[in-house]
Image 1: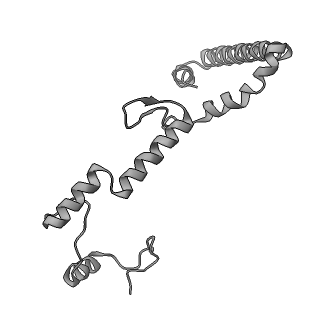
Image 2: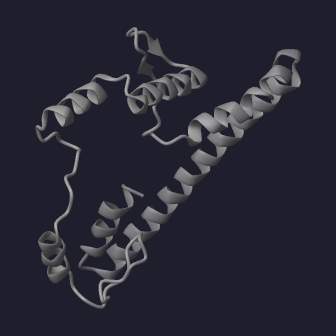
Image 3: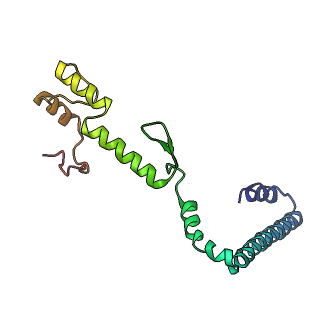
Length: 162
């Protein structure tokens, strides 16, 4: 597909109708040959796969195919490895899930450094990032005045036009 655009421009830039026809015929023939080459390569790859699956060792490979297919369909953004609390790199999916579970459990139970700093800041009366003070009536009125009317409701399903 990427080579197709320059070739199309090459065909369009012809002045003579005969030359344009020759170039177009050459382009179509080249495209047909490329498709044939890809088909032959795919067929050879499948033949090798089927021959391999026909052997005793290949029977075990049948069970690997779904796993490989799953790995290929994974998003690039999938997390392939993380570090645990000790700094060890975890690569297996089950261990990664366990690592995230332990991380979030310590984060939300108050055992983390963030939670202790947050509690200390609240007790001392210092404003801490992430904690929100009470909303005054003036702030509410100001926010409501800034909102546009007749807009779609948000996740709270409360319209602004109240």
